[in-house]
Amino acid sequence: MSRYLLNKFLFTVDRDPELVERYRSEPRELVAWWEAECANTVLNCHTGEASTWLRFDDVEREALATHDHVKLFELGAHPFLTLTLFIALFERDNTEPLEYQKSYGARLAHFSMPYPDIAT
Amino acid sequence: MASIVAVIASTHHPFYYRASTATGEDRPPFADEWTRKILAFRETLTRARPDVLVMVGSDHFHQLWLDNMPQFLVGKAPRYDANWYNEEREFGLPRMLLTGQEDLSAHILRAGLDAGFDLAFSNELRIDHSITCPIITLRPEADLPIVPIYTNIFAPPLPQPKRFVQLGQSIRDIVESWPSHLRVAVIGTGHLSLELGGPRQFGPHGPDPEFDQRAVEWIANGDLDECLREVTLDSLHSPGNATHGFMDFMLMMGVAGAGVKADYVDTLDLFHTMEAYFTWYPNGAPTA
Image 1 (spheres, each protein chain N blue to C red):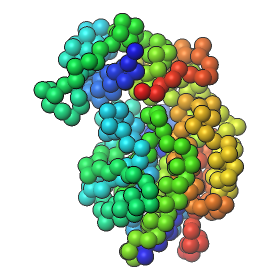
Image 2 (tube, rainbow over the protein chains, first blue to last red; image 1 turned 135 degrees about the horizontal axis):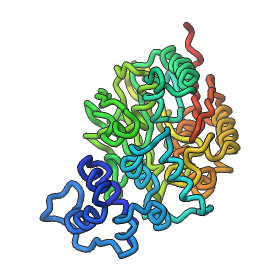
Image 3 (cartoon, rainbow over the protein chains, first blue to last red; image 1 turned 180 degrees about the vertical axis):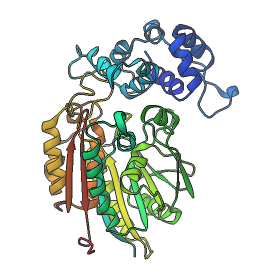
Image 4 (spheres, one colour; image 1 turned 30 degrees about the vertical axis):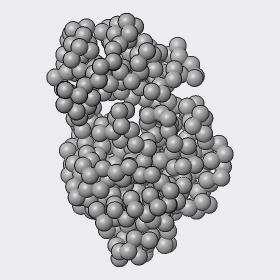
């Protein structure tokens, strides 16, 4: 299990407008591409000095590929990263202010304290 | 030596900019009251006539990342670009450019290291809404040089609450030992109870109004003893999963001094989180 890699996916996609759109429209393809091409990139280093060992497990990959923010919360992905990216993906479909943000919280209502650990 | 003419602690609400500038049907019903409170709060800084702003905040996974995460970081640069694409996207925040006060940055780094804080530094720092929100609320002209100080309230393992207080106490001493005639305001922003990305987010109030009430009393009274007794890294999970940002308020209580009551206190109960505004005048309230 790699909370770090989940977070790295959320972090790098969130900051790139093109990747945000690809993740909205073709999540499974984007996740596969990202794992193959970006997961091992050491940020701010050139590609010849990439890491060699980072990969998702099947549960993590499926959670990302299905936009399953509830599973990401359960896995301990950083809640701020998940929320920020998912607002970018889906707030545009709101029919009233904060509609997506409220439904996002409601889908997590079955979680009680303590929440899943987010330490990396 | 430099003088600290104001110590200010505040929440940083990224929705203020959009709410306060919205008009017509887009203007939320709470915008007028919020704007009135912010203008009154702004006056507490303006009256102190600062020359330099030390700005304490926390990067929200913008420039600082898990492959290289500092606990406390001081910016030392001649300029700071500010606000990020995802803050423009979600909050409508404008791009900004602030000037740095490098002499004070260097002084804080040297004296902080010598005082036992192993401070990280950055010579090229793009700052985010934890620092630009108080610029927008308190000094929208953005015309004063700054020293940004980032704390990690976001990516565990975090420093202990008492460490935030100690750093605040040291910042007070260090700024007051800066060989300069300039007037410095120390401004820091954090959170009261807050939930982000969890089941209690975006409710009609903050997730834990009872915590908020106690927290406001601790800050207003400078009650560091009680605050440090009650607040631990574990206890901060209960009021809301992003409540560790309260430790930046504790840092500012350290700057203001134990037992020192705030000269100005105001709050605003909003959806999602409570706003809170505090100002101390270490040398007495400025006269008009």
